[in-house]
Image (tube, rainbow, N blue to C red; front, side, top):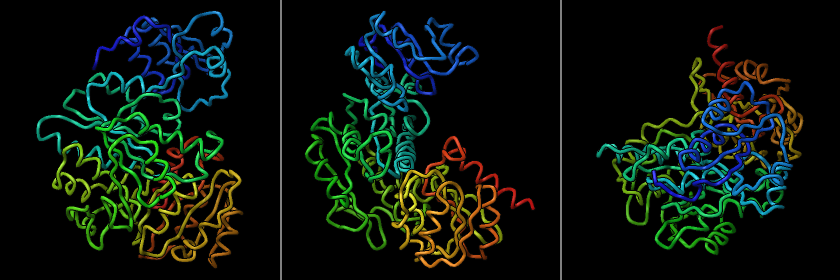
Amino acid sequence: MKDIKTYDHKNILVLGLGKSGFAVSELLLKLGAKLTLNDKDDLDKNKKAQELKAKGVRVIGGHHPVELLEQEHFDYLVKNPGIPYENPMVQKAEELKIPIITEPEIALSCSDAPYVCVTGSNGKTTTVMLTQRILDHHLQKKGHHAYAVGNIGVPISEVVPKATKDDILVVEISSFQLLGVTDIDPKVAAIVDIYNNVHLDYHKTFENYVNAKLNVTRTQTKDDYFIANFDQKDILAKEKEVSPAKMQTFSETDPHADYFIGKEYLESQNEKIMKIADIKLPGIHNLQNSLVAIAISKIMGADNDDIAAVLSTFAGAKHRLQYVTTLDGRKVYNDSKSTNIEAATVAIPAFKESEVLIAGGLDRGFMFDDLVPLFKKHVKSIVLYGETKYLLADAARKAGIKDIVIVNTLQEAVPRAYELTEPGDVLLFSPACASWDQFRTFEERGDYFVRFVEEIKTK
């Protein structure tokens, strides 16, 4: 880890505990900072908070003491990515012109290990996992490692102290994190895709959302690389305006891109890289994710043997079109990460088999007409639950689906869906909605789905 002096003896307020708040606090202590940690939740019995308190951190829980920012000079406020900028502490910091920074920028500024960053509306986690595995396969030949960090669930600050200059960090970075980033310089940055109607409750407008995503490449240099989606022309034009890095492109259909999906192979302009039939992950969107992982990995030194070793064996990230089991000839997939319509549009056409679909969740005020053509082509029966069940049922009726079952909960939906399957079918859970009407997170929702599937197995 680099011994940077940026935060030495600086008075810093960390807003929000959580995984990243705890990890960045420990890192800042190593860098010589004087810390105050604040969270709206009561921290008296919080083990992590008490650990930090024992190390000299001032811990304030149960409320946001806005007056503290006026009473005391702070050099920085470190904001948890999930905390909105409308938060009173953040607003007061902006008013007082206290620099607001985020955990990724702090951690990456002192990383000895070179790093690559991946973002996008959909597919970033799978792309990060593929990239990390390919690069780790490559680096292990010399006793080194690639680490998957960031929005994937492992704070960057947790890994930076142990990662050496011969390792590589593969960083999943979200729009929430990128909004607060002012100066990062990944050796390779990639935007898998950008879709509308994603996180607009946080970013307010699509333009704001796109601008946040573009922060992944904005402060790169001409010696770095940026991987861009050749098929999203409007976004590509903005990326060309903003990115100072050398650009490489990928495409699902266009052989003019640097990397593309051929008839039988994943290809570049120079070579056929890997036979598509040998790739384990289902769906054309995962071929796109694979292209991004290949582009990044090749720049960072991996070869085709490393790529083949991973793509031929990797079966998917948890909750992202994750294969669960086969029940009496029916393959079951958990795509709980399908928290928006765009995610469902890539999951539903991923299979050649007939599908029985489970969908539903939080009502964000969207209609589901974009799913009608996919329902018509791929879904023979559908089971719907949650706040959006009637809206989705309307789309299913427009698609001509005969078996439309409406229930209240996911627990009711799973056995009803199984009853509608036949041997050879796919039972797909791809909600197309956020989880917050009935679950705290999409991970919790997916875990419950797997549990309900297991209950069918034991009956």
